[in-house]
Image (cartoon, rainbow, N blue to C red; front, side, top):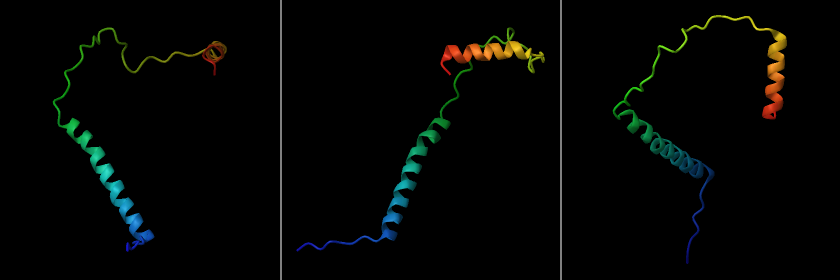
Length: 78
């Protein structure tokens, strides 16, 4: 004869908590391991062509901005 063991709600929730915690712990190991890796070499970026930050303020014409927004909305499909 086999006896069916009844599981309580408390035991079920406790088991699910352990499962969720172990999934999070295992999932975070990848991030920890990549943090220990050697830094990537810096990309060769030519900053002589980049504009100075902060960029200068330019006053916008509301009619031109409205037309550009409408055109972009219609061309991209909203």
